[in-house]
Length: 353
Image (tube, rainbow, N blue to C red; front, side, top):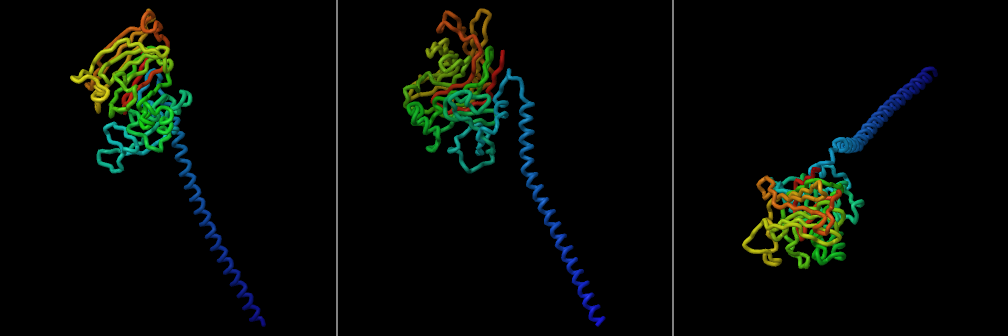
């Protein structure tokens, strides 16, 4: 009887030991699972937090590195773009040609570089522009990259919202909305009084629209002391090869000075010779406006014909008794206008004088 009771006690002891071992194993497994869960949790947290910290540091860097507003270069403007722009990855060559996304080949070569492209879309007012430096007043959409920017290049796709809008609002000048860049108007949001502004442009294509407004007065022009669309100075190069300074006051144009700088044996002709400005070539245009002591506006225009040096080509004076009798003496906006063409730009600079 005692032997039997002893065996029962031993069996119970053995069972308790087995249960203890099982409990220890289960505890160890639970500990391992908890540790694994913590590791995964912290890994996910790390993955989420690092981009946020990086973005915060980047924005802080932009704020700290903001320079004096007296000089604005296109490089600084483009680097300071925020995430309100649409970043599109496209295959672009080193030739500074900014292509419409529909024209970009999917086949890449050794001479191509994968770079992001940023867009700015047209807005009805300067306040509604999503860029802190620029307002695209007309032209639908434009592209920024590296040290340059461009109008839209080529025809917009059929599903483009801007093609549809312009097809309704201005089919005449945009070929039913295909080429809103035909009336490209870009305005800087800062005002300047005495200044010089310059940019290099490369005409990729003339858009041979049937519009009656495609004529010899079209070209690449700079806005100067822009008060609004009806009151400003224009300086630039026309498609008939002439450099021009014009004043627009209350909607009326006054030609202040004009000079032929791109002479051609064949004169401008809307159909047969629609452009005398060299294409696929970088040309620089610079305007300088300074008020004189006698309340006149001295206007000078320089051109870099691709040789790396600025050449003064025309200069004129605006005063009370000429060109609408009211010179623009106060600060105004600056910017760029092009007509019926696809254009790349680089090295835009403006400097107070």
